[in-house]
Length: 390
Ligand SMILES: *Cc1c(COP(=O)(O)O)cnc(C)c1O
Image (tube, rainbow, N blue to C red; front, side, top):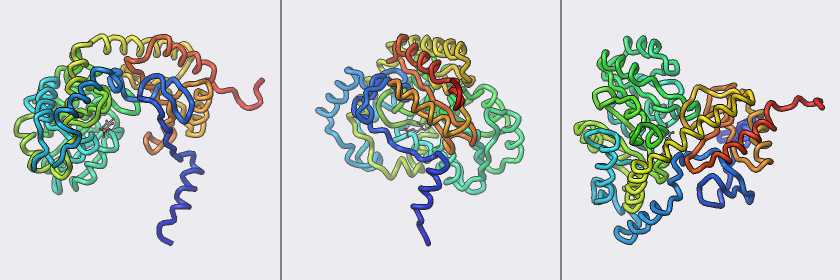
């Protein structure tokens, strides 16, 4: 029988892979209410604590008064308004690129760029741990699609030698489930030497890395020559929503012509662009947010090492604790929740089989005392006692 969803769902449940959506009943922040329970959360991507910032809210409100609430049309028809345009200019400046183009979400930006740049007869080479939206864009493009070993320049180079047509090399800037940074200077050199273009998705680095918050390209000092295609998203450190592509004037013009997820969708609400403009201003002006966050990351890593937790090689706000078994990861997450802490268990297929983990994310909105609470709770729950232990 077709569409046996009952069986498919039962199979997922049996594999400890069934997902549920926690119901958030408060604004985003360290202290949340989820499913009726007050919890201290370490799982959002609001890295700078801007999602619920009074100045950002005020900018959104003022934007709605001035521009209304809906985009009203696609960008190419009559939905491209002054706040969108100003936001694009601010994003180009922040990332040190000639131009930027606003998309409604990061997922759409990634689909749009990859499918606009490569097609049949071309090649797309991706880090095997890239975000799902990049992998999906690669598949949808119809280009020859190949995944290289994680952050492995040799593995990339051997694939580049076999590439055909125009070749796009695609990587996360900061890997969303591991927290490590791509070795961008080396990847950029290898790609450039072979005439390929490097595309970097900096969803997690924008705002958190670089002296001005310009992200991973600012951190490594990489210009548009080395990273011709840069993606940033606005729903993480910027605390709002949307995404952008930054690069040369010609790249942006080509995307306006050919990127279907750009062309065939309503522009984001202009008031949202007003809110994001305020976020960008705070992100640049208040460098203490990045400094405080770096302090919390160091505190967490020191404390976790003392307890003997297995962390990944990450200096970013994404600090996963590797567990391995999915059922055990869920059990640990449940034990933390019983102590008033919310840390999500991440399981396959979001991460490779056998590498389930607790994905701790830190935010500038957390305090040192809150990070200490997390460390204390982890020390209580981990290592888990074997059944039968006293
Ligand atoms: C979150 C994320 C996206 C998707 O961005 P949205 O704006 O949430 O659609 C894309 N790429 C990476 C690496 C991400 O972490």
